[in-house]
Length: 308
Image (cartoon, rainbow, N blue to C red; front, side, top):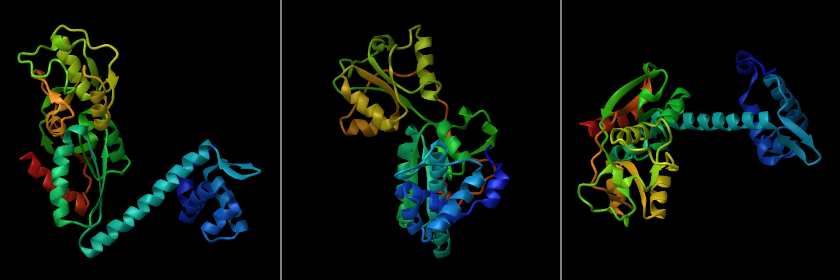
């Protein structure tokens, strides 16, 4: 049986996590012991203590050495995350002491990427030593990372959560959506376009239950049309643009600013069809009553300028 959380917290040591990482990298207890500067008997004892702490065997002993089992790979993955978080903690502490720099982790949905880039560009002009991690994903996944404490803030929608009251929205943005297509699509440039004319196109759409997917489904329903069958589904900006490049009959819904940027490089063309459904705003989201770090506060100020 896996040990309780209080038991693990009270017994686990940072040096033990380093040993787990070394074992994964070296595949040998002897070489792992050398890497973390302890004796082999000491490493053997430490590994026994680790497995006792978790209440489970983490490695399979083979003639070639040690190989992590499923539980071991899980523990090693989190050992790496903890080690990385400690490195980030040190960076942020140094930044605070020196009065500049530090570290910032921010999540963003595709439609908010242009606003974030402009805000970060201005911020790094005054904070050139600031380290920034940017995670682009769906609102649901970004909220999960906020819950885990892995993001300082995210630009997304809290309404997709089962508990939206667990978050605070610090700034709100409206989002305009447009229909886009392969540059050589036969309907590019056609005025007075109707949605029915796009029914047989090769659609690239967002996965089920995502806000932009729901909006497109509503558009087809309002027009009395069957939703496109056999679409290509992705939440990735790069994948969507790549898919649009592959077939001259490809079409998709995309945030206006992202579409304008991509169109400037000749990757896509906008279609002359106005979507009727209203789009839900998104915002700068943090955990309820959480205190922003100094770098996150600076970024928030820049993002609020974007909302004006």
